[in-house]
Amino acid sequence: MSTFLTTVFEASDRIRDGRTTADVYIALLEEYGELIQEVTALSGFSKVTEAGPDGVAGEAIDVALCAIDIYRLRCSGATETRAIFEWFPGLPSTEDSFFGRVLGDAVRPLALEDRLARMGERIGHLAAGVLRPAAGGLPGLLDPINETAIEIAIQAVRLAQAVTPGLDEARLVALARPKLEKYLSVRASLPNEEMV
Image (cartoon, helix red, strand yellow):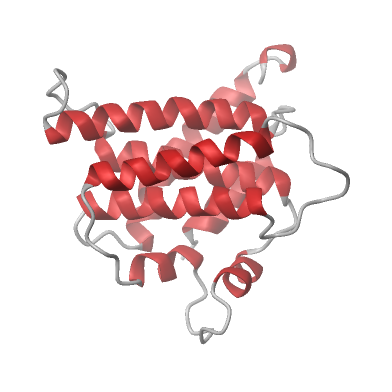
């Protein structure tokens, strides 16, 4: 089975459109805005009462995809094995899936709005790093910007898990694939000068 992180890495690597981390950050903000709309509609804090076609889980996955794409653009040689080793130091290496570990961790119960707020704080922290050029050389796997991008992806996946009982890695990949394929087909059909 293909893992969520590897699936997103592979899709990110196939996109050759000259996008920058700033471009993807703007897309991340758009997806986060859509996620806010879904959560507030679900929670009754908005005049919008109907969920969109993707729902909370779908929009949360869109946020995760953007965050992982930022990470991948900044650290193109990273592998899932290395991410597991760096992110989960000292844990036995019985699970070969980064998000398999995330989904398997005991998660503190938090209201969706609290999860959304924490994610928003991390997205704000990410701005400074992605909106200015890196200061020479390739960043480390867990430099502060990459770490923040992965934290956002983890929060997004956990938010999707909170509204999708029984969400596992296979379902996560199944939810992500159509989104990635749609994105790849749209990006491939645009002429280079129109791509961001």
